[in-house]
Length: 366
Ligand SMILES: NC(=O)c1ccc[n+]([C@@H]2O[C@H](COP(=O)([O-])OP(=O)(O)OC[C@H]3O[C@@H](n4cnc5c(N)ncnc54)[C@H](O)[C@@H]3O)[C@@H](O)[C@H]2O)c1
Image (cartoon, rainbow, N blue to C red):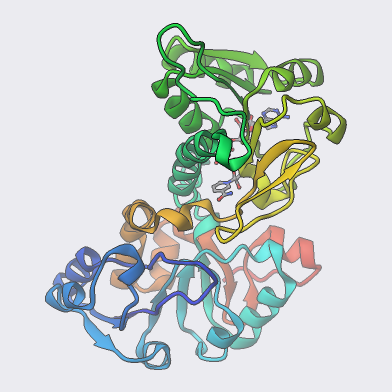
């Protein structure tokens, strides 16, 4: 199969669908890999590295789309990319169809086979192609929070770790899933005083078992959230209710009562945010101040650390890329339930129940 890797064109997107190491493995398996010039530059992979790994570099995205049987990307195709897609072409990337009817209609119209990273589901119910980005966003939340606690950024002028004789900062994390656990680990490692709230008792038990001693677990309810928020120097929003908008757990009135110069990092902003005063921001202008509290609400946090993110993402996606390339999408989907669950729109039909339901369009499983 010919596998094509175009350069990402979404604003501030530096990741790439495949790295030279994957081009090499695909070549060894008998496939051809076409990579658009400069596609890997933002992730530290030069054209020479791809060439050495056996890929063919091409000058334009148009050529990639015209020649490849499968396109491997990171972000959903943009309008100019949709115009280049061809019927029956496999497109393996993040689509997030639930967020855009226009995207669903474009995928139907082009009759592509859209396999979405975000719905590939493992046998244990986990979403293996979402996990790496949550791991990164969770860890980054603490970096960013620590930075914006500094005085020049209008923060409280606190060192997260404290020093001997001076207390560390208080970090409160609402949601103890992947993002929350990784944020907690980072903050605890720095020596902060960490509290993590979740509604799931089994999850709190697990966190209590595996986390270091400077982390306290607490049942998430309105009373405890209020109490913890008022103590927080850094508040991290990390909740998820699968398939739904994030619940707003911290009211505007509560934000108004927070310490001046405290920092909110609302990682759940990509699902609407879990703090009433959150609104989406970008890497270009990541923060704003509301009621004296610094808000960081970047919707694509991993994009800023593209070298790490591309490696983490492709570690998870590549086994599926290889399987689809080796077997073709139809056999791969027949034999592997995870790939089957990634089928969203197939040759003009919606193949994913929740999307059909949401947009009231007919469902036709292939
Ligand atoms: N901004 C970004 O760049 C970025 C990157 C990755 C993930 N995210 C987002 O981060 C959020 C968390 O993702 P995740 O992978 O950790 O999800 P997850 O499913 O692993 O964890 C979510 C946790 O929230 C808990 N929860 C649900 N309702 C709660 C409540 N009322 N109070 C406290 N806890 C509650 C759940 O029990 C679960 O443990 C999601 O919205 C995800 O989309 C954002």
